[in-house]
Amino acid sequence: MNDSPVIRHDLSALPGLERSDPDRVAYVTERVAVALNSTALLRCGSAVPTLFIWAFSKMGSSINKAIAYNYGQGAKILPLASTLGRASLPANTSTLHLEGVEAEAEGLYTCQALYDASEESRVTFYYTQLSLEGQLNADKGKGPDRAPPGPT
Image 1 (tube, rainbow, N blue to C red):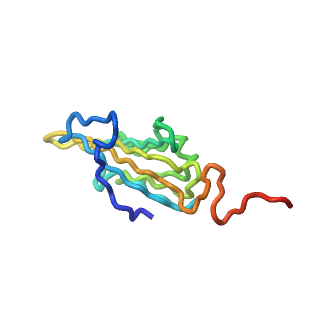
Image 2: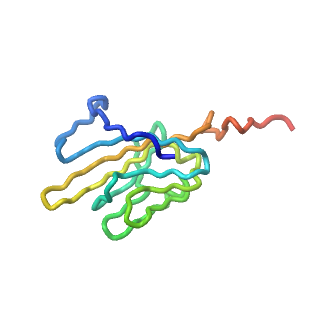
Image 3: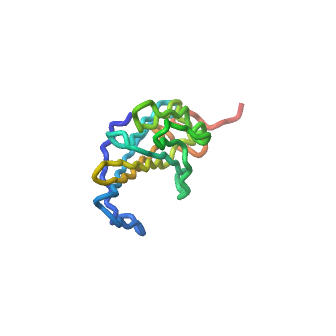
């Protein structure tokens, strides 16, 4: 389910993205492939950040929309998350759980995490590309086990 390796992102490959302070900002990317109606676990680091926000953008879109966050007063799941599956943020974690993954869940998830240490703060952006396994045409909901409608 989430056995894919975490890949440190080479920012030189992203045109227009510059790191102003590489000692305080980190970028991590991951790819996750799950079956329709299964469960996806999207990680936001190995330690729980002080504050974090999850955002989602559909395939081919550059618009990020907030779906969940925790600003230190408990987790909050926003209404958009319900279109992706049953979303939850279990206590004492920043991992986004999506149960019953919907076809609309395919896309890019971004977790922006702030780690506040007594010496100095650090920000990490976790990018997770979620794709659906076994989907021949995700836009039309056709998979290898679903034949297109035919004459009856």
